[in-house]
Image 1 (cartoon, rainbow, N blue to C red):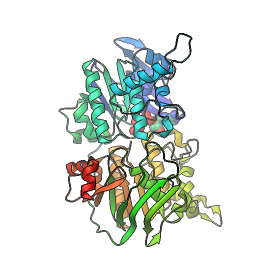
Image 2 (cartoon, rainbow, N blue to C red; image 1 turned 180 degrees about the horizontal axis):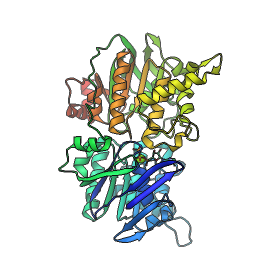
Image 3 (cartoon, helix red, strand yellow; image 1 turned 60 degrees about the horizontal axis):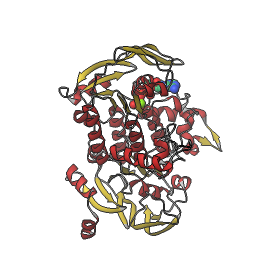
Image 4 (cartoon, protein in one colour; image 1 turned 180 degrees about the vertical axis):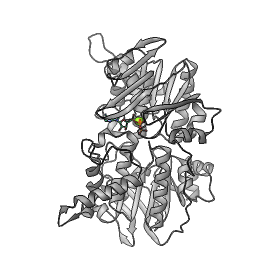
Length: 506
Ligand SMILES: Nc1ncnc2c1ncn2[C@@H]1O[C@H](COP(=O)(O)OP(=O)(O)OP(=O)(O)O)[C@@H](O)[C@H]1O
Ligand SMILES: [Mg+2]
């Protein structure tokens, strides 16, 4: 790709960008949120058709007029925002638009199920082809998307943050698959904010900043610090803040909480006999494999879990906490940042400002009337806090880059000024600079006496920001570790404990 430019209205998303990818290499594309990574690969994959510059494959100029054309030319893409059809099954999604046919021209469902099983197995994905997409967790949906892209038999495979919702074991499997593709001569363009993954998987990396390319480097010989410096444009101080505060009195106390849903949903793991404490001013991590029940526990605390019976008790500041729903939870001082930005209800057509204040209108109104000046001031402060990259408060959220949309969700929850902040993969898809900001923000919140319960699949993040780490396995607490003395290995070992040892420990 040479001299590529693209603008959206007045926004220059790309200026004279260039990218050269060799056959059979894994080429990382790096840059902060809004740097232009997705836009660049979307041009290669036929999503955007009007742009400046040249794209060629195998020395031949190409200009795709649709994603289907790009696919036919051997360019497959795993998009950052998953585009599966939620009402359809895994198999139907895998073969959408290319369903196997019977002799009579109808869809051959039996063959489709069989082939789907084969595709899933080849991608190392353990899922039933008949499952409905809407019943899958975000990470599982991502695996389906990956299996689908792999099945296209591409020469160039674009992966836009494929691991952001995957747990460690799934990342390992994905890397095995990528190495295999490489051996077969497939070129992989790999976008990720998880820098620690790069050394393991990437050959070269192109770094983007503000819509331009600042350089291409060999990954094995380039220290992570240099990459970060290229991305940010300056040296970055430490990633994790020093957590100096000592936690205070117990704030959230969960005692032997078990949830039994009225209508059990496949793939969900509700809390089983969970006991844990979050003190005022304490950041507690929630570790566990995908499917260990971290999200379900957070949802229960926030009042958005399925209807059913619960035993055990939950108290916040000594008062029983059993919110009837999000509104009730927020009124009681509990906020939740969910892992999936699409379902967490960003109104993509609405402004950054209204998306940020929607849950906290009471804080910026008097007598039921929104005080516009106060609203603008608070949003400005929050945007600065989060280093939000947006042209103004008035632009539609849908025009922000993926990571910046995540920051708006974060800002919305913080605007409610919670006493207990529940976070589900809060830095998913967020660049290193913004990650450091979010960690600093968490430390600051803790200093002000707020309790934080944060689920994360990134162990360095848990170890670097939390006072304690609670490990879940199949809905149960299997370990409660002091992060000053524990190690990644210990957390992982606890998370992968088999049932038998769980019972022994209990
Ligand atoms: N449809 C659009 N309309 C208006 N502006 C857009 C649109 N898509 C992208 N942009 C802008 O183009 C710039 C580059 O966005 P892009 O999505 O390529 O960033 P990115 O590097 O992929 O970031 P992230 O790491 O957050 O995914 C951003 O400033 C973004 O706001
Ligand atoms: Mg992107």
